[in-house]
Length: 491
Image 1 (tube, rainbow, N blue to C red):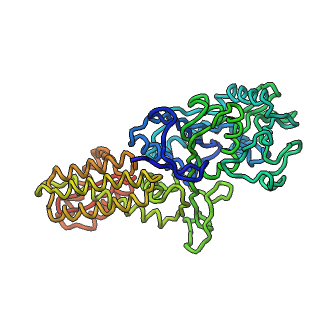
Image 2: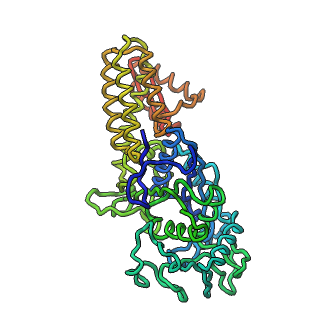
């Protein structure tokens, strides 16, 4: 079956076919490391990970590059305001280098906790200043640049198809309608390639260049680094939907002006995670009647992954929540919706446990038929632009059918193993199933044994206290079954 992906550039689903063979050259826009990533940002990275995992599942090889923006991202899209790293310096009273190193480490840890596969290459903007200068000089030689008081700018009027990704109406775009006009800019849509350090100012991050001492603009880094590691035309460029009108539009302009070739074949964009229009502090009050808002640091309505963990949810539960909605639809976050997702994931965990414990029963041809059907449905729905809502619907039906066979012992242990293998195969894409548990520390094992002894003596009050201690102190949930106590890590 052919995998179809929605291409933002064409505004339609297209059969996915890499430029060369089975290798996919994929670039994903990474974080600006001036603050923590919020769970709205992380939704995009999880969906990009879903795309990457599914490409691998389909037999493609993926060369994946992600940038780290540690310089040049200003506080607005008009190439005005301060560098976000400078804002962070003033806020935290540390050097931009120290701030970048700290938040980059936290971001990578967040991705690991959410089960994302790491890129083959991480590339920092500050490690590729020479490549960015070289690209600007190429554009300068081709007549696409001009210099004004505060830097070197790209002249968008020189590019006939500027704005094709966002489908901007350039003729109808009045100065100031999209961005505030910087003095000396020829067109409202022109953007900075290299910013000059103001006279009398000393920055932690600045470099010499042919145009004077300064620092690169935000957009130039992605073009320079993507083309260095992946070539002049990428197979996939991915990021959040908010990058379409400015950042990705400008990446296309400068890259294609420099090379004369398409910058990327497929553009993959993820929609916003919204939250209720109420404060999410003081125990995170919320109301279903509130107007949903995009989660954003500038609005002060953002949560980071640690905030979710502090509320006793796990990163795995958050990942599952993300993957209940299609990446091109907006998703509304609330604690109730996350709780519902966690409960559904618990039932999936219980299903897997039931399969693993199943020992006796008659061999069933029905299992082989159900497995063949669900495999077909999994690929069909995921081939349709990663249609996870429809995929979960088919998987829910499959789980229900298998549960009926388990209850009536109408399947053998080898049938159960066949189902387990199928679920783990799907999970190589989804990455939401519980992994093999960590070994119990000796003191925890002793507490579980003590609790079981208390239950045998019918001292249920003491047993409940021990159960609470195991949960609060060790993050271990104990469940009582007819076959004895079962436990699992939930933190």
